[in-house]
Length: 230
Image (cartoon, rainbow, N blue to C red):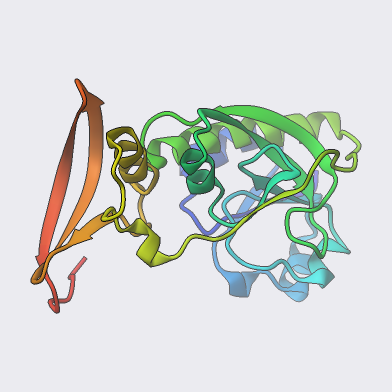
């Protein structure tokens, strides 16, 4: 059987790779760098499918026109096309969502839908992303085993804008529930955490919990102008 490619800019756990190989009886090749996604490189691997969970770059036309390519988006498409889907969902008060597995086309998040599967949005962003990875694993197995025919998206198109760094500032938030959501939705590896600035210091908030109208959180304090060694 031809190999399957998983292209992901986030860490794809080795145990999930092994789990997929066992479930699909096929070799799984993991790509993590934009430079690896070239027509020449992919042709040398001759994959049956290419799956894109947590992929941050544009996919070349030469790739999606020559191989079956599936991207996963954390909204119930066509609702929520665009960037920062998790944060945009939580800001809008969503408690659950669906992960949409779609074919790759020129327009971002506009491809036909293979399948959708529900996702709980409770907890920190890191917890949600880890939960999503497990859901995506089951979706990949289902697609590989059932080979569903993708169908066009139906419904009103709602677009999300990619969030900017300055939007992580908590200064303008005046509701404790919104503040809790703001901290948790940015609490993941590689994301700009919720922060508040004073004249001399920057306060970054993670690991928030909410109870009795109070928030308990971990705070990292660094002096402005001092480089972070992490």
